[in-house]
Amino acid sequence: MLTGTAQIGTMRKLSALLTSLSLVASRAFLQTSSINTKSSSSQSQQRRGPTLSSAAADRITLDKMVESLREGVYEKILVVAGAGISCSAGIPDFRTPGSGLYDNLHEYDLPYPEAIFDIDFYRKNPMPFVTLSKEIWPGVKYRPTITHCFLSLLGKRGILQRIYTQNIDGLEAIAGVNPELLVECHGNFRSSGCIDCGSSYNADDCKSSMVMQGEAPICTSCGGLVKPTIVFFGEVMPNRFSQLVHVDVASCDLVIVLGTSLLVDPVASIPNWVKSDVHRCLINRDVVGSFILNKPTDVFLEGDCDEIVRKLCQLVGWEDELDQIYSHTRATSESNKHV
Ligand SMILES: NC(=O)c1ccc[n+]([C@@H]2O[C@H](COP(=O)([O-])OP(=O)(O)OC[C@H]3O[C@@H](n4cnc5c(N)ncnc54)[C@H](O)[C@@H]3O)[C@@H](O)[C@H]2O)c1
Ligand SMILES: [Zn+2]
Image (cartoon, rainbow, N blue to C red):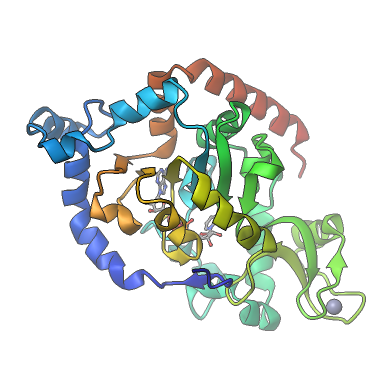
């Protein structure tokens, strides 16, 4: 089931198909929801919505999901998150045309965009990653978004099974998500080590070298290059992923997928591993992965995740709680911010 190694592009061939079919799928999902979180053009589609067939009547809808959340039916929510949840913090995602990181890497003179996270390329030329690190090192510049605070809220309510995040920005932890409930699938900046001998290296020293001096640290044991424990292409995922994912997919009762193109395995496959009757909710700008199949267990909420998450909290009655967590997070992350 798992490759154990982060692999890019296994679903890339599907992406053209997804793009061409996404409008059709979005419309189908819209028609089954009586609550609008969509654009004005979508609103008119919704008003024209058809009579539900009996099969469609059994499907999960936004209304039903909201009611279940309000009544505490879901007790073990599994979250799969990607770069889209951090876009409103100011960190670009990878693949959004125009604003995505991959369209804006010219200054690094890379042979191909993914090279910035390629271990063999780093060994030859660490500077593109060092330069990017200065930009995205957690706690330096960016603060958690409403969506990160929503994830923290699920944790505080005791209904979060686990968050599998592909993000390396550490914003879930800064938003107060209990580390036990978090799997940072592609690593984090809180530890660092040598890419050759594996010796650990003081993370503060690594930060000071990369962020302040703009250079990659050198291992004191073997002279190899050091980097934060971010999982590069060609590197093995953290053990924590394979230790927890089997149990989590077997026991969760709702999956929420946010801000990801679901193009990087194995994380992209997590929503497919849950039991067939588990409800799955996609909150994203476009329909991705197996959500394209529009299964009766799926709800697609199309648009920006902060906006949708806020609306969801309004509907469920959690908006004040969300705002409290957001204000608290902003205050603490501001006071901890240091350059
Ligand atoms: N913040 C970060 O830590 C960060 C930033 C860039 C890339 N990455 C890396 O990206 C790789 C995985 O790709 P991915 O799937 O996470 O990103 P991706 O760029 O491939 O896809 C992002 C998805 O989010 C959607 N999106 C963008 N902004 C959104 C918003 N405001 N609301 C809702 N949806 C939005 C896009 O339409 C797209 O479908 C991982 O390896 C991860 O390490 C991480
Ligand atoms: Zn070494």
